Image 1 (spheres, rainbow, N blue to C red):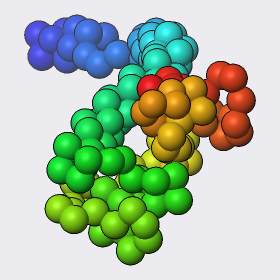
Image 2 (cartoon, rainbow, N blue to C red):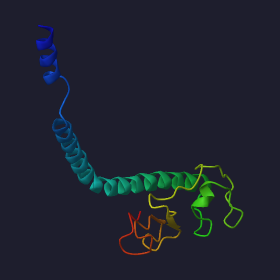
Image 3 (cartoon, helix red, strand yellow):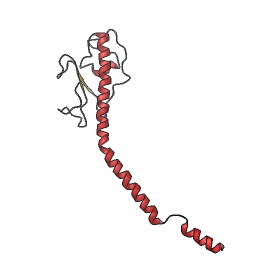
Image 4 (cartoon, helix red, strand yellow):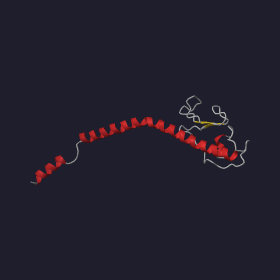
Length: 142
């Protein structure tokens, strides 16, 4: 009787190598296809981050302008939001508005010009984009 039970348990215990390999194969296919499907989302996420950063920087530039009645010059750049400018025009009511000037998701500093080429009454603020070069596809121009 003992022999019979032991034999029954041996045949039912554990998984075969084939079953384990089959499950691993299915998991590999599922993970691979999900990575493939998510690959395009990274570019979209970077573009959304650029839009959010530009909105945030624009808000701080508008605060700077409300306090001082002018925007930082092109030469002063976005650094004027972090460190008080020493070149003209020197702001009278300067306060630190950003901890640091952010870079875009591709590691390039955001581009700023006042007065702007595309917005002569205001400023241009944009990212060079993934190609990191001045071109027509730069991400959003304010």
